[in-house]
Length: 104
Image (cartoon, rainbow, N blue to C red; front, top):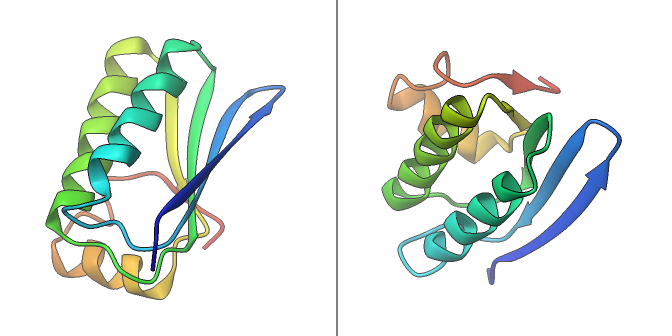
């Protein structure tokens, strides 16, 4: 499923609505969108992952990079409404507790 990313600016930050597979081919695009959003200096950056049916290790690496970048810039970072498949991958890799997850 082709990756699409919609950016929504809110009073307290930015929400990236991620739809489609996050894999080796598409993860650089997600990385670029995260970087672009952080440059806006939002109070929060949330990635809504409800419509992500598949994520591989390169996608997980981008989520971790995003968390590190936002920590450096003191931006709150959260994964919102994660799909069952994303939850499973994060759980298997013991990363579910590492991220702030909302909408569980």
